[in-house]
Length: 263
Image (cartoon, rainbow, N blue to C red; front, side, top):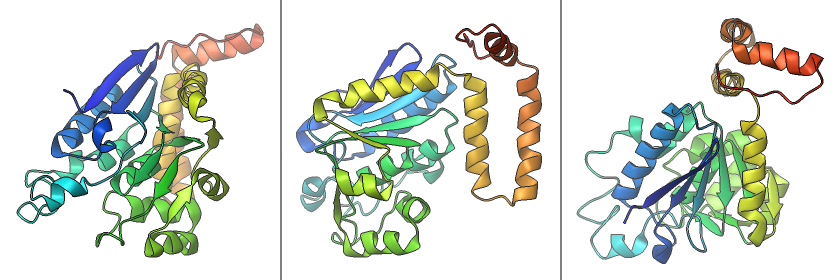
């Protein structure tokens, strides 16, 4: 059985981590499938938004501690760390960060360790009321190895990130919303409906403009302002020549909803 399921509805692709009996704890197979499916969706012109969620009652429990302590799986004494053939350039956190397609995490239940980093790596997070983020790394003798040390300080600031990581705290959905780690908190039974509604709202806009905006937001994390402005201008020129730009202008003048084709 595939450990990552893919379903496409219109211009929205939903990726579901699929080990519900283990709260979607990660395996080498899951990591490979997640990376390849994310790349597949990003290269598909028909996909304008990617939703990432988990099957069953949790998003992702992180490292499968049962497998690790049993001597099998990631983190086992005879298999420390990640699989020996793992290329960090194609690992899910790196792939997720490099995607131009917008990503939304539909956070169902708990996201611990690696699962928390995956959730934080998405552009937008919508949480069910029962959802929680567990920064359990230091309680397990490791560190946030999948982007958390880069992401969390940028999302909540150095001091608050230090408090969360050093204590290994679990944050409720209400705490996550207050800290800005969740964009919205919705009733559990409305999670996918609300997430899909937001995804469809995004997908209705000009896809090339959205992808360019995401690229420039990502570049802006490391560029000085003057260089960034020049970089943005170079991204703007091809958009001015696009059919979507002409459609957007005509729709505005004609007071109608635009229909963008990504051209």
